[in-house]
Image (tube, rainbow, N blue to C red; front, side, top):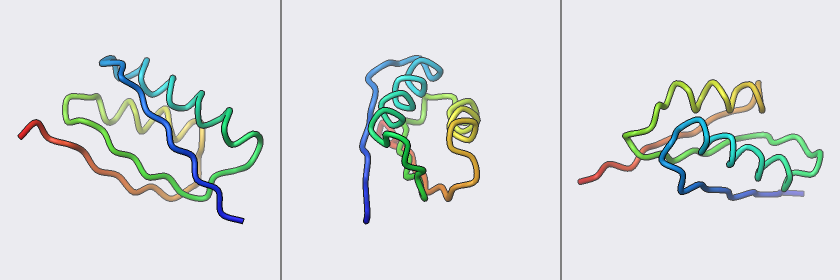
Amino acid sequence: MFKAVVSHSNDPDSLSAVEEVLQECTNSFAGDIPKARIIFAAIDFEHSLILQQIDQAFSGIELIGGYRSHL
């Protein structure tokens, strides 16, 4: 079975935003272990902090990412 979870945050603070998203994802997975991640983030976030937090929560899974510029 394929299960997809979509989560987002409007918080401008990188740590608060990623914590909010991770909590929503954890609740939605309800014990299932994700196999891949797709991440989109604006360029003004602290990407290394976001990735570190995500890797702590869901280590060992594939990651596809991108960012949205203000242009």
